Length: 206
Image (cartoon, rainbow, N blue to C red; front, side, top):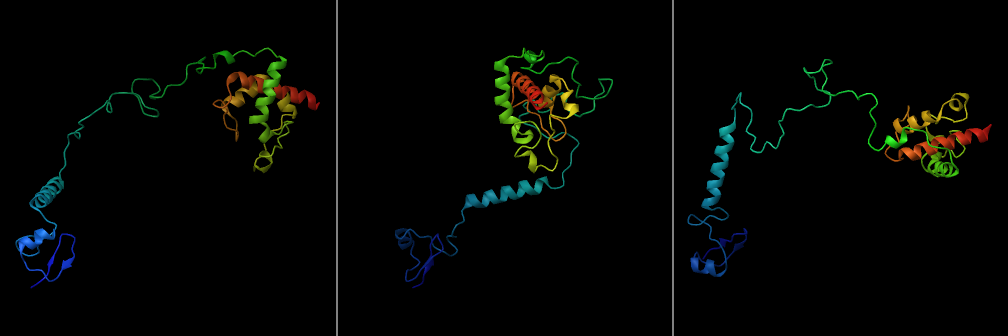
């Protein structure tokens, strides 16, 4: 009488090495005839993996790697900041053609007519996007601005009063110094409206 091990590794004592009993208890005999957890398929897979790994070690080739699905990954194309021997300045990235207008900004080239509706729209947009830093009166002392290490610009200096509407629209579009661009948050028509409202604030502060 001796015990034998099942496929989960637990020993069941008191059973004989009888295959019929093993089958009855759904167990796998240990010993030379049956090895737990190992089959011929497992052994073949291990050998094939070992051969595949050892066969690739130390191989070098001057040929490009095999790319089963190129998917246009290696096509000839221009990329930003790469060198080019086609253009005179040897740059792949081309400068913007003079007079190019960003998509959606064509209607914002000309200054709109100053109306009460435009001013009201400018005030609403200003209170949302500008007042937190520049304050509602435009002195650069907003709730967020006063906590900044560099205080936001006041609109009531002589320099800022002398700037045309287009200056404010350009700053809203491209940003300046620590101020980021707002062109993605504020459409071009609203940028003009905000600029007009800033001019109105300057007049009220006189």
